[in-house]
Amino acid sequence: MTKQSSDPAKIHPAIAQTLVRTIESYGIDAKALLAQAGVDMDMQKQASSRIDGSKIDDIWRLALKATDDDAIGIKFASHFRLGSLHGLGFSWAASSTLMDAFDRLSRYFAVISNVGKVKVKDVQDHVEVALVLPVPYGIAQDSAIDSALALFMHLCRMVHSDQFKPVKVEFQRPAPNSSHAFDDFFQCPIQYGAKEDKLVFYAQDMREELSVANPDLARANDQVVIDYLRKHEAQQLVGKVTALMIDALPSGTPTQQMVADQLHMSSKTLQRRLSAENTTFSNLLDDVRIDLAKKYLAQEWRSIGEICYLLGYSEPSNFTRWFRGMTGVTPLGFREALVW
Image 1: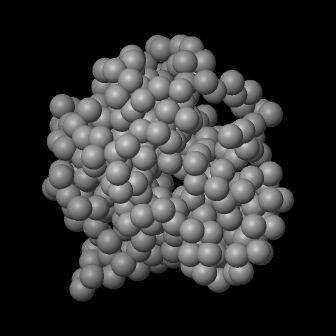
Image 2: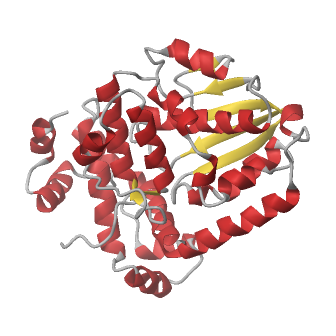
Image 3: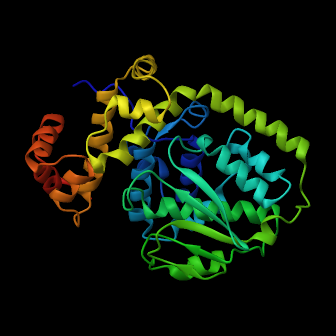
């Protein structure tokens, strides 16, 4: 099969740019790490494009190894520039309340990534803000998740006060070696090994009027965000399709009709729109599976049987045959050849 589609997740280049600045703050050559990850990124030329999510994940892995600092995700937040997300940062900064700001982040999260979402939920006198990704824990690098929650907190402090803090923070990750850096940054109780990655705030704090509020400016920047998202509508479709595939795989191989039904369109319409992006449903499914398979195989604690299940295969022999056809090696051969 000729690979036609891109990797499932697409990330705004501002994330890579911020990560580069973070790496350089350690005195490390970030361009060399980008090269190792297979990213040749001219920052100016890439300003309106998207970057493969798997490449960003590789940069995080290499950065963690190079810095030997598992708090690098926390340090990421301070290197973020407000104007780098096509109006979303300015729209956040002009919001009337933090609740309003997080609602915008939830509504327009596709600016940052075409997969995943920010879920905002009222729970009694608290508000929970969770980062939800359509993959099992362990696929995304822990530092990437750390950086997202730290960035959300950094943005809150930019518009509220430097002393602003959540009620608690929950991470799916295990406790890091540099847990003191997390404590110092969030200034609240932190739970590791949780079911979700989320920030919890007092509802009263979230609904307090912000001194920097400017509704007219917020609406103007909302329109900039909407215009940007319209330009990437096709990529968003691919992201939605791949997210539905990933979600369905543990229950078996998803079909084109199944995914089309969930997107409220006919199978023929889905086929036509994917064709316009120079891909097909079957090619996209193979791309999703091979990307996940390589990540799962890199996690030594996962058995081949578990990986088969996660990828929708009922028999290891079928998975092995498919994987060999895609890569030229068996799953075990791939795992043994990995050099980290």
